[in-house]
Structures are given as C-alpha cells and as structure tokens.
Amino acid sequence: MTDNNAGGDVRLTGISKTYGSFTAVHPLDLTIPQGSFFALLGASGCGKTTTLRMIAGLEEPSTGTVFLGDRDVTDLPPYKRPVNTVFQSYALFPHLDISENIAFGLRRRGIKSVKKQVDEMLELVQLGQFAKRKPHQLSGGQQQRVAVARALINHPQVLLLDEPLGALDLKLRRQMQLELKRIQTEVGITFIHVTHDQEEAMTMADQVAVMNGGRVEQLGEPAELYENPRTTFVANFLGTSNLIEAEVVDAATDVVVSAGGAKLRLPADRCSAETRTGGKLLVGIRPEKISMVHADDEDSIAAGRNKVTGRIADSSFIGVSTQYIVDSPAGQGLSVYEQNIERDSRLVPGAEVVLHWNPAHTFGLDAAQDIDAGVEKVEDAQ
Image 1 (tube, helix red, strand yellow):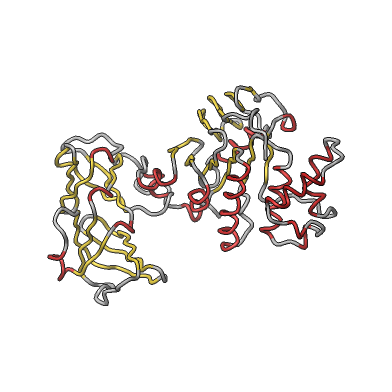
Image 2 (cartoon, helix red, strand yellow; image 1 turned 60 degrees about the vertical axis):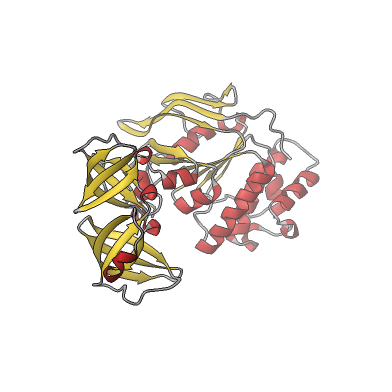
C-alpha cells in the first residue's frame, strides 16, 4: 500500500538537546529498523518527546545527526521530511467532514483526485460508514483513527505518534493498541511511538527503548526487557520487581547469595553486575514468578527452588489474582501475585509462609544502584 523503496532505518547519531544549562537529551545513538513498531518509553521529563520532535524536525538537535535511510535530514524543515506526526490532541479540523480531514494533506499538495486514496484509508482504519460525519460526531478512538489515516495518506516513511492514546479511557485505549498494531502491520511502515504507559509499549512495540533522565537505560524486545532488566530503573519501571539486597557466597556457573539467612541461586548469565565472593548484589524476582505456601506445608516444596520465609503483612483480592505483601528476613514488603485458582484460606495477614521460585527466574543487578529507581512511575505519569 505504501512505497517503502525510499525508506530505510531511522538513525540517530550522537544526537542531544540542551536548553541553556539543562540537558533534555544526552548524546545518544539509536537505530530504528525500517518497518518496525518502535516505542520510546519513560516517565515525564525523560527526553522521549524531545527525541521524537528532533526526528520530526520540530526541535533542532544541539549535537548529532538524524538520518532517514542514507539521507541526512538534520537541517531539513519538518515539511520537507518524509515524516508525519500524530499528536495526543488529534488536531482535526472541526468544520471538515472525515473524508476531507483525511484528504487535507493531498489537497494541500495540489492533488485533485483524492477519492480512491481517501477510500483506501477509510477502509484501513475501518471508518468507511463515517466518511461524511464531522469530528465532533465521533468517539475519541474514532477521531484517533482519523488522525492516523490523515497522516498515512501522505505515505510517510515514518509515522511518529506522540502519546496518541493519552486522552482515551482504559478500555478504549486497549482496543486502540490492537488497532494501531494492526494498521502498522498492514501498511508496513516505521511507527515510532512515545508513551509513559508501559503496557501500551509492551503490547504494541517490536522494540522498546526505556528512557530515563535523557538517556536510553535499556533497549530491546518487550519480553527481553521484562525478563532481563539490566538496571533497577528498568526492573521497577516495567511492572513490579522484588529487589533483595544480598551478599555473594559463590560466583560460578550459578551465583549463590545469602539474604536474611536464606541461600538463593541465580544463573551467572542473568547477572548484569560483576560478581565476586563477598561482594554485594541486588537479587530480583517478579511477583508472579513466586509461589507461596503456608509454613506448615514447607515440606511440599520441590528441592532446588529458591526459598525465603516470611509473614503476610497485607493482601488484596483483585479478581484474577490476589496480591500479597510479605515481610521476610530477606526483605521487607515483598510482593507476591497468586492467580486465583485454588485459594488457600490460611493465607491471610499474619500467617507464616514460605515463598519459593525457580532460580532460573532470578536476575542480579549492581547493588550500587538506587534500589527504588523507577518506582514512582504512577506520580511521574500524571
């Protein structure tokens, strides 16, 4: 549907942005593969929107170069770049119907015959029956799809999406995540999506760059970032992680650590930090990877699992799962998510319990990092 022959990767080399003494984006190198759905994810003020605006030509980089394929577009104004942007506000023209909103870019370029292309776009975003309506007669999600169609009709090499789902309610946002992914797969062009919503990034993107303080903390596929975070910020910002301060007892194929009297094991290749006997390590485990039994049933735990004892401090029933907070000699306030399949009525606040999990699900991080980095994501995202 689109001509990608003139496309190519988006490459940022040494790109940065400073405002006086404030550095919004530290020099970064980033390659966004042609035809991918790429997300820049982070809290407010992390530099993700500034990076997007430098690709669009709406901000001039302080240093560095923006390439689209082999073409250096750093000094080109926005309208000369083969790029279109969809903003959170959609910015539709209220006096024009949906067809004319979508046709706007073509008409501005002096193209007279637009019906066939407009009809194709209406079909792509599944809004054919709404062609003659005005924007105010559509829902937020439908307006969003019109904004995407209006951008795509220009056949950009790259579509930039700046918090495009931020104005929608949760249910509609989830529907639109799948819708945008479908559209991107169908047209096959590069989508670069800025968001503070981790679920949004994980649902849609092939690759995610987690940004923090104007730098890319980690880049990778969503599952890789979630399962193998390399920093405490990524571990805490993407979902929830239990981070336990531990001392290295043995550093071989498996690293053995001691935490609150418990011996825990983890694979050496899941440690992003240097490990040496006597050194410190932050041991991480996701709440849903942990199983929990009443202390009376400790003998039922299979050999070879990581185990810590504790006491339930709090529990919250949230339908699909029950979320527990457990205080343990290994760490206070450990989170455990147990799916509601067969609930043990003894697992209530005050109960003595044993937490256990597969050592292979454990990861190790540098203990010199801030253990709470990335935790305040809810406040930051407001």
